[in-house]
Length: 165
Image (cartoon, rainbow, N blue to C red; front, top):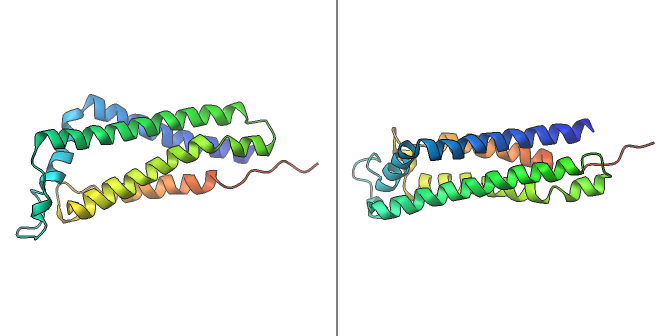
């Protein structure tokens, strides 16, 4: 039971983090929108880099990018809390039921990992050369968040077993 509770608490920690991320994106929309705008503009990358043709200056496209990030984070948050509720319902059930209930949290954590890896490290970091910016660089944060979520993912997917009599 201790291992199951530990898995639930770690999952709740990730869900709490995502809840705050979504809350901040709604309550301080402009700060985070500016971050996305500058990454897409590539206006603080190294002068004279040959990748400037990739920059996006359209306010509409900036909004689309940022709103898609918020949507992605919101779906992830909902699935995390829903998954926690599913696991709580089967907390004292046989291991097979508990393992089967990991379905939603696994999807949620996978969405999270893909967001940090694809959207932030891949698209932001490499396509829009965010790594070159000293001001608008979220790669370190993205790598940290990817590592934390990845660790929780690996712990969660470890099969639970029934206690031996």
